[in-house]
Image (cartoon, rainbow, N blue to C red):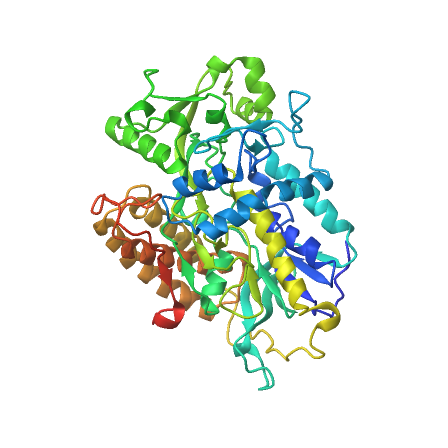
Length: 545
């Protein structure tokens, strides 16, 4: 790992986020110049390492790219951008090959003709999920980190929490008047001071915002940082109302974010009520293999109908050898909690899992702001539409991470062709703030935001619930902004500020959509509109941006 020079914070490119999207971009950007990769925690703390199921790609002779495209479009309820879906599906197998070349140990095929073992998940018409047991994300994360650590042009900077993007508004002289991103202000979490990182190209790869909800399968850092920063910098965001709730999160008093992979149902797991009866036949002919939004609403409906705290995911009929072979990580973790999933069903509930909306980007990952690109869950690329198809998430990170790097390299805006002089940027100003003596406010507001979103902007929505959420979030925004303006930034305060911004964007988007499509289900508008249209929020047209 290259050492960060004590004074130099100038690079050819800055990547904010050390997951699959960020490190894929960094590895290819490093072919042409110096790259800093910022992570607000440890390098493997993001959502990538938590991904269990796998990566979708057409790798079987009986499958086709066209089938992958159609499955994605159906899951996305027609709101997907077909050109994006076709682009990602067509580039999927190449992305898998690149990971294999980095040493990701995908499970081998069970016959001579199969290179890798492929599993099937909800919404897919074929077996096309390549995986590393039930811990694919961890294997991908470790391989990418190892490659980045070995690259002489990459500087990895953990424990560096991005605060805000540096734009034309922070430039001291009129020599750089154009509306543009020049880098990022970031808090050195351990040293507790803000650092300026400057580059002609900045890449947002900060992940999603599912921690805006009380119950989530995501790690604690999934607080919508990139979405909020891009919004404050003037970028449009889109489709923020589409929040995917994974149907099967472990229900346990001590563990609230352990995901039971989609592949458990893909390999034959059955959803049951406490009396042992199955119920998915009342909701969809695809049963447990229906897309996630359908399964999550079915579970939610049964829990409300019967007053249940959870339903059951039964794997016992698959046999102990099968379960321990295909799901070793899940089996071992559940045993630690005194649940033997080879003998008893697993208690599960839906939990916030994935943000289908985000910063608007094109096929090159370009945002509205020159000098700023984005890739992965932070974006709304047009791939997922109103609901993400299982195992398309890591795929999007890999394909768009590559696309972003290709576009930046093609523009020759860094390395030898970078501008001779970087703009002089205002230092971070802490002259009018003090250390907080009321940090309990952060914890209280964090909890209130997440409970408000869970209660009023969850799996099933109504106009009344959204109105209540809008009122509460408006008050919280003002309180958080007042607090932010008076006290020095901390990692918790940065996340709180971003959470309340993202909560506001989700509520605004949900109130605009007057239909039920994909992950957005409203009892006031249960029908599907005749035309599928993105919900686009533009900060330049919003007084409270």
